[in-house]
Length: 261
Length: 127
Image (tube, rainbow over all chains, first blue to last red; front, side, top):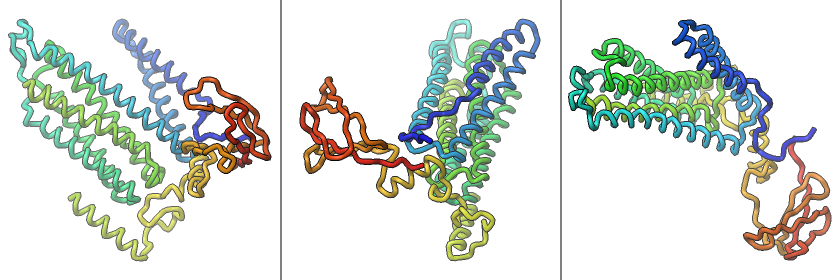
């Protein structure tokens, strides 16, 4: 039987890219039918298919790497480039929302009263829950770095503890932010202030949930001995994503919560 | 609290290091500290590449190709899984006209254009 003479991974044919594309179609058309005809069938189908796609695609990657050994050093290098490029694209995604915020807040329109925050808006006190949220995310950045070092040193239990702590802090942030959203004196419909606030912090919150899920998967894999002290890129990718989420929050806090109040 | 936990984890592992194998007796392939190493757990192509590199071999061409002088004493070594392989010689850097020729096993051959020496060396792929 012929074996490859290179270190790269020629992936076996897979149905998940197709199911992912189909779910994208169902979710977009589902959104349209939900808004126009008040039926959620397509949207529900699309979301289910998306979740199934993600689960099975990433499960296959874990099978190919941890159990079949296809992730040689050059393959890992490519994955690192991929994750960096993806996070960079997400940075640009958020740059758009910060642009929108600064566009409206640096030169407030006369309809807003010519000032920021606009007339009638009582912004959240930046030194209350938002400051706690900042502390929570910064602490989670420390714990995830601690987890990385324990993994590199081969210490299983401290890695379990630090990674669990990171996940708990992420969940705590989400719970605090959800409570803030519920208690806020302004809504998404409250002009450009409400819009920029909730769209920017809302997408950030979604990314916190994604990052927390990523780290929970890493925790699960760690309990199943998937990571070695030298090769644990799945964890590193999760940690990079988590740091990115933390940095976005810092910009949000400084710009919208503090300067914008 | 984190400091205390860390301290406890450190003292525990130090105790383990001094010979008390209290923990994962059910798992043979794990260090005393609990996280496996690549040596213990790597499999498939990753493992083969790692083991070969440890022995100074590079069957999957992960490292940069070695530089040779191309003289009779230091010919370009051309690995081959068969008995002949095509060589493309860039006689000088930045040349756009490549000199192609078959290199056969046996005595070193010379590039018909610049005269550099090339030697075919048999190369087994790990299975």
